[in-house]
Image (cartoon, rainbow, N blue to C red; front, side, top):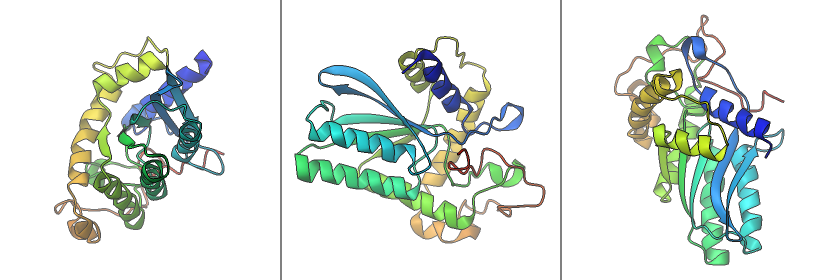
Length: 237
């Protein structure tokens, strides 16, 4: 990957989910993993396109590597700049099952992301002026993440150490995390992530009690702005 493209990937990760004056809406999604291919540690990065989400494109590549016996890694850390949607979550589960049944490989995924895709953040219900995902979209995406967890996939928000890993593998050396808007966003997302993932599936179906009595507003309130909270990843094309 050319240096300019690597820098573009890093900027997209950094900007994803930012709120306030630092907000930069990105409809580009990247899925990146660092794995051993034919004995060589390799950074693999795939993006979304008109037909498929980034996770689909990355999994398709990894499947080829499994079939050709090039993939040496069974523990894979997947970095995506938005959490997987329901369909991508389902695809990841089936990928794990297929790798084990058809090829005898026990793939273990850790999926790390800086913001949600189509999931409402509790902290945005009162203070955020962006459009929010609908309750239906929220339910669907969250059920997908719950299915991943049930299948043994580890999900977690990005942290300072993850940014160092991304910067090193994307050859970006001028990113200062401490005191940045990204660091502040990550702190807020960490709290939202915990609260959202603690929601039971039954609770998800009850929007009134979805976030322990946090007041929910309309997803498309008249004053709402396009922004980081309800991004259509195909709008870019």
